[in-house]
Image (cartoon, rainbow, N blue to C red; front, side, top):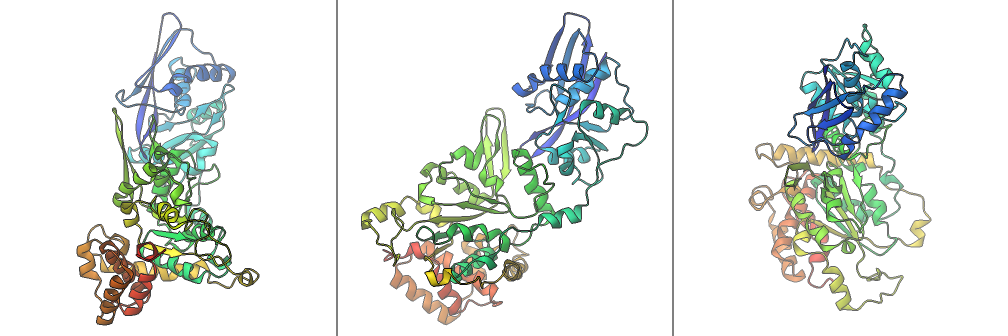
Length: 511
């Protein structure tokens, strides 16, 4: 007896349909799975056998062959347990489904027949709708995630018997529904706010400039000065995620398995803060079966690297390509996967090994060569991709005891949105350009027009402070963003002077 059931598998951050074919013939009892299954798929045999028996059905004592088509693509994960079980029950005529042709089944089975959650439900639901499917049976914990896709009947199943009841029900079973607007607005709330931050007006201003132009930023300061606290509030002033951005971000987190069960969609920009002991595969992505890394999990959000010089050099260097291209390509002998990685880099570091260089309250114990070696751990090519360097001073005790008096994140975000809108209008005829951070040399000459006073100021600063040629372009890009915040088309001297302050590490006489 032969049966065919539809399921799906994930490849990268997209999915494709898989036909689970079951053939039961006479012969010695045997269970074979073909179609490039990984170890988790092969081990489904024992889970399926126990789940079928413990759910009150009979497992055939004959030759059972499972084919996962297309057979030339690698199948991984435990989501095929449910469709394999249903295929066996149909092939042995213990199940007569009334809806199967346009329905996808997904779920891992426990030995007692419970259906456990799996990863990658959102890209699978999107692929199901794209391929003309009308329904999807998923574990109960994955129902919210699948219900994001409009026009697809989502039926949650807590166990094997519930999945069978859905397939056999002659009426239309009640599908799981999700109020998308309310779910999105509920998830779009930030837990932190810039209004809670005491003092640090100059740093908050630099973060506003970075958010308005999409610039990468590096904060230098002694321990306890608030670098991490400020960085965690950066997503709260970035423009809100659009629905397309939210879906793309949620797909990545779903495939990586870091989406919480009670979270249907990611509506706030991600903030990822990996530890400095992370490997290059953990940061960029990879593995035997490639998975997204931290740069992809930070897609459409912020990647925060605390204690930047403590990261291994090879780890930092592999980050240069995704910072430039906005994607990560992982190549293996059998496949090549591309993950999106368009993120804003925020980094923090101490000014010296002991952390107290320039701090008026603590004495620095580091010699100038030690400080130079410490700063030299960050390569020039990586530093080239960071537009803003800002010094974060420790707060005096008097300011620590005062009540917070800063602007709320929502007010700052309004200015950021206005500046971003000016940039989009300016670049509407320039394909692939969305913010000032991505201006190329030819674009700088076209869009960054300085007044005479601003030109003289920048020339004097380059001669006196020893700025390099690379710093010149970055000063102009940052000044362009400051002018956008000021609603000015021309770069004035005050815009350029503020941008010059954000190039601490480029000064010859910084030490």
